[in-house]
Amino acid sequence: AQTVTQSQPEMSVQEAETVTLSCTYDTSENNYYLFWYKQPPSRQMILVIRQEAYKQQNATENRFSVNFQKAAKSFSLKISDSQLGDTAMYFCAFMKHGGSQGNLIFGKGTKLSVKP
Amino acid sequence: GAGVSQSPRYKVAKRGQDVALRCDPISGHVSLFWYQQALGQGPEFLTYFQNEAQLDKSGLPSDRFFAERPEGSVSTLKIQRTQQEDSAVYLCASSLRDRGLGGNTIYFGEGSWLTVV
Image 1 (tube, rainbow over the protein chains, first blue to last red):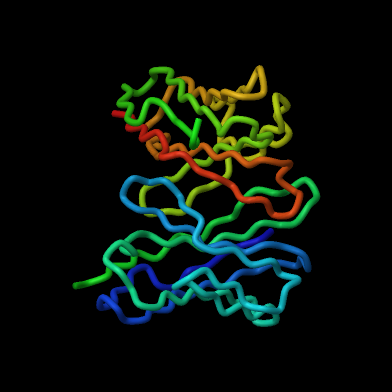
Image 2: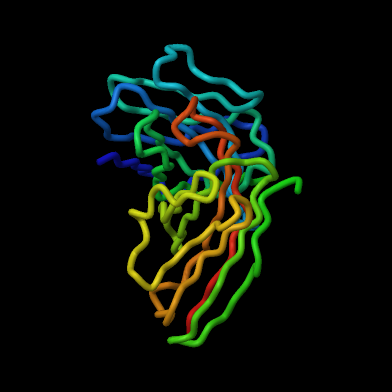
């Protein structure tokens, strides 16, 4: 079975600074996808960034980038130039490619607070 | 519609009462998922539909939980004889294609907050 671990329950960062959120996972699969989702107080999960395991290049979306270390099973999220609107819960998630299991497996989340 | 729509947004149920939660996925989306998110936890998978077919219900916690999607669009999650441990946010999500293909993006609704008293 796959598991996702987020070891930082809470993080804070000053506006305009950079913060990194950690995520590790455990799987015996070779092909899979990894995601970071943002969940504001409204509870809607919003996709921030995704990474295909077969791609060596780290995904980047504007101020958001990941450091994907497949051998170490690590998938951290870096937020640059933090903004007040980045304040939210952040969830790391795993999805197996193909087969009968395609659902997302989430970590417990990291609560990020961006301070003015 | 523009996004995944869920209703009711908030529901308070007395223990033992039956509840029904509705999900309107994005138009044309083949896959539909239900997740349960307890307080302080990440969402946990409940069940998956491909069109009207329920292909995976391995995450449903008990036989009190039942989900359907009879015409391949709107879905209903029904919880019978609610218990306090059923209190959670129930998230619905949809994606355009079959879940196993290409890691296609899954879009979430804002959830239905269920409190059982």
